[in-house]
Image 1 (tube, rainbow over the protein chains, first blue to last red):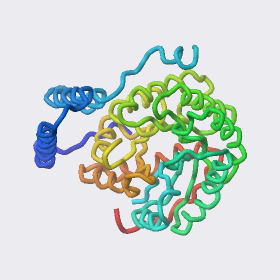
Image 2 (cartoon, rainbow over the protein chains, first blue to last red; image 1 turned 90 degrees about the vertical axis):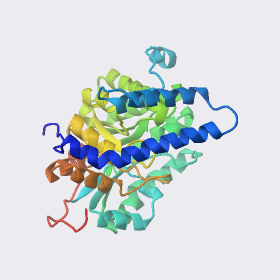
Image 3 (tube, chains in turn blue, green; image 1 turned 60 degrees about the vertical axis):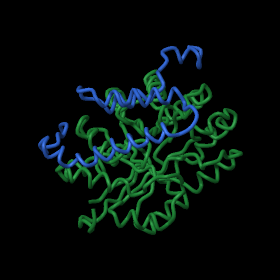
Length: 87
Length: 277
């Protein structure tokens, strides 16, 4: 079986997803406002991840979901076998 | 449409959930051994858990006409205790010939520690020596990418393993590609907040195709939705995908992967489709 493509035209996809996209962007905006109103300082590393994620959303190349995942991920370490297993 | 949930922890669910699953079209479930929410204190604690998985749970599933298979291991969250882990691994063969036991799982990593890696490798060794299927848990959230790559390293280092007999579960957008490229099966877990949504699972079917791809609810004692697979079915239908494609992912693929187990027995449901999803 070959890779199945959605047969729905782009205009229809956007029509179906528009309100959901709007709602999720609004939700993120409200959460960031909530964070601004809160007292004290927040975790800098987490804030940097949030900013990196938001930046990826404005990119035009496909694969944004994968890049957002990576922005919130710990890096892979090449030498982990030697460190853990001595090989 | 009939479907199979290839990863669900029914010991944590009530009997009414079996009934609901059956009404939604579920005809079989596969239940990997996992963490109970607290660390078990002894090998006998695991022995009792394995008795529950291999004996009672099959019976309880059968009350709703659902077939139940299971997988055995000590999970990654309890693998920090290497001594206990080795006692459990030595005890597992007592149960491997029980009806419905498909293999070793869900083994894997949690926080990607040295002890977790050691216990994972010892599980792999048992599976290789006894020719068992393997079901793998990949870590959560920020640990997933690093942990999945470590797991793939260990799997690919072991020349005894047939990649088509290994299912790497809880894949997401940043891990699915490597899993499939290396010839393994991949499972997508549908969770309310972490892991994957039904819509993103549909995206991955569209991007990678349906071969060697499974969808599960991983329903357990935490926030989870045991009827998540029907949510995926509906999401695929709403996008206009064919019933044949959906059936391949939610029914035929689990049968193909599980069918490689020497303990696999499956009685297909009647041909008449039930009402519902």
